[in-house]
Length: 96
Image (cartoon, rainbow, N blue to C red; front, side, top):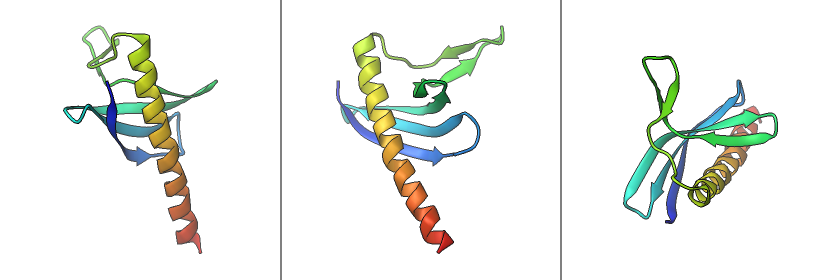
């Protein structure tokens, strides 16, 4: 499995949710609405989920094993960090 595209759709500095990301796997399958969350130990990802009738959130799509989760997390966080640098550079240019 290769993460062939990472698109950061929104970056926020407010609240715990830092970004919304979409990925493409093997140029064949897309997963949208992966969240980048700021936690106590740094950022982590939350897979797309839906609120069930019992009030709990259930993942819509998720990796089956820890290796796949690690690949996805590394690709998403790397894409987020690149987008954050671009976001801050654009904000600095607007301030000038």
